[in-house]
Image (cartoon, rainbow, N blue to C red; front, side, top):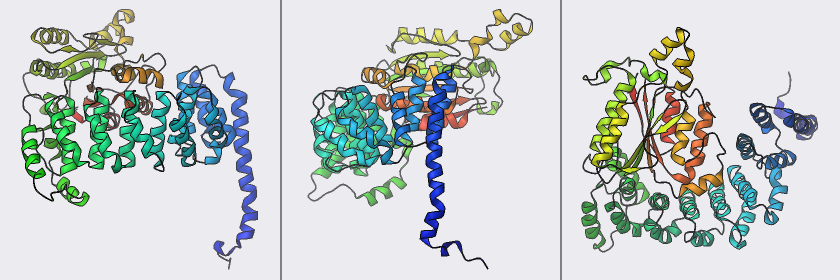
Amino acid sequence: MCRPFLAVPIAILAVLLAPLAAQTQAERAEALKEFRRFFRKFKSVEEQVEAVRTLREAESPDACEELFELLGHETQEIVVVAREVMGGYRDPASFANLVAALPKMKDQGRRAQLVDVLGEAQIKDAMPVVLEIATTDKKAPAELRFAAVGAFAACGYKEGVESLMTALLADPEPLVRMGTAEAIGRLRLAALGTPLVPLLDDPAWQVQVAAGKTLAIVREPSAVAPMIQLMRKGGRLEEETADALFRITGLDFGRDADAWQTTWDRLSAIPGWRIPTDEELQKAAASRQKYDALYGKLKDGTTTFGGIPTTSRRMLFIIDVSGSMADLVVEREKFDTGYRDFEKLTIVKRELLNTIDALGENVFFNICAFATDTRTWKSSLVRANVVNRASAKAWVERLEPIGGPEAQALAGAGLGGTANLGAGKTNTYAALTLPFGVDPDGRVDASEAEAGAMRNEIDTVFFLSDGRPSTGKHTDTAQILAEVSRLNERFHIVIHALAIGEFEKNFMKVLAESNGGVFVDLGR
C-alpha cells in the first residue's frame, strides 16, 4: 500500500516542489518578455488591451513596473486595463521598488495613480510611506490627498491616520473633504464623529452626502440636531438624512422633520438617555419598513417616475429611443389601458409626461434621449416652471424610435441610406457618462472627473432602456459598469434603472444597486 501523501517528509516535498516554483517564475519572466516584444507591434487598441491582460498571471516586480509605465499611456483604454491588472496584484514584493521611489517621485499625477493602485491592491505595507507623504508633503495636490485616504480605507489601515484625517476634514478642496469623510466611515473611526459634524453644512452637496453616510455608520449623537435642520432644506439629502437619523437613533419618523425635532428635544432632556446599542439597532432595523423610512410617505416634495419616488430637486431623465423601442410589449396585463398603442416608447413617454406634470417649481430637471447618439432637451438643468414643463412635454411628445419598423422596411426595399438604421443602435456608454459631463469618445480620466465633480448640478438620474448596449466606445456591460462606478466615486449621483422589454436584467440591476439607486422591471 502506498503511504499517504502527508507522510512524505517536508524536506523531500521541498525538493520536489522547487522546480515547479522555479518554473513558475520562469514562465512569468517569459510572459513579460513576450509582452514587451509584441505590445507595441499591435496596431489596434483591442489587441493592446488584450496584451496587457496577459500580465495578470505574470505578477512580479518587473511586471509591476511595466504596468506603472502604462499608467501614463496616451490611450485611456490602456491606462484603465493596466490599472485593473496592477490593482489585482497582491504580493508586497511586487510593489517594493515603486513604493521606495514614491517619496521622491516628481510627477504628482502618476504619484497619485500609484497611491490609488496600492489601495486597490491592498498593499498595507506601503501605507506608512503614503501616510508620511500625505502628512508632510506640502506640495501634494488634492488628487494625491484624495487617493491617500482612499488607500487607507481600502487597506483597512488605521495606525496614525486620525490626526491627518482630522486636518483633511478642513481641506480647501471639496474632493478631499468628501474622500476623507468616506474613509472615516469605511474605517469606522468613531472618534472622528464629532469633527465630522460641521461637514453637514458644507457648500458642496457631495461632501454633505458623504458626511451624513459616515455619521450614520459611526453613530454620532451630536449629528442628530444638525441632520434635522438639514432635512428641512429638502432635496435628495432629505431622504438620505432620514435614513441616517434612523441608523443613529433607532427611531423612525421618515421625512417628518417636526416629529424628529419634537422627539429629539424630549429625549435629550431625559437624564441618562442614550442612543441604542448596535444590537438594539439591528432589532429595530429588522422590523423597519425600509422603503417608507428612506422616502417617507408620498407627499409634497416627492417625484415619482416608473414607480420610483425621490425627493431630489436636480434630476436628469435618460430615455432610450433606439429602434427596438418601437417593439410592442408582451406582458400587456402589467400596463394600464388607455395607451394609443402598446409600443414601448409610447408607454415610456406617457410615464414621463405624467412625471413632468407633477414636478414642483422647486425642481430643476433635464431630459436626454439616446440611441447611437445622445441629444438633450436643454443644455443644462432648468426650473420646472409652467413654461418649461410645457416645453419639455412637447419635446417628449415628438420623440420617436430611431430605426424602427418603418426604417427597417425602407432598408428592406434597398433604401438603406434613407432608413438610417445606423442611428438607431443603443449607445448605453454615451448615455450613462453624459451626467458626468464627460465626452464618451474622448479621454475619461481622474483629473477630468475631479474637475467636474464638485460643480455638477445633477444628483439623481433615471435611466430607462430596453436593450443591451450595441454601439459606442464600450459595449461590454462589465466595462460600462466599471467606468460608471469609477466616475461616480467623485460625483455621488444616484442612478435609478428602469427596464422595459427584453434587456440585460443583471446589468441594469447592478447599475442601480452599485450607484445608490432602485431597479424596476416595468415588464416585457
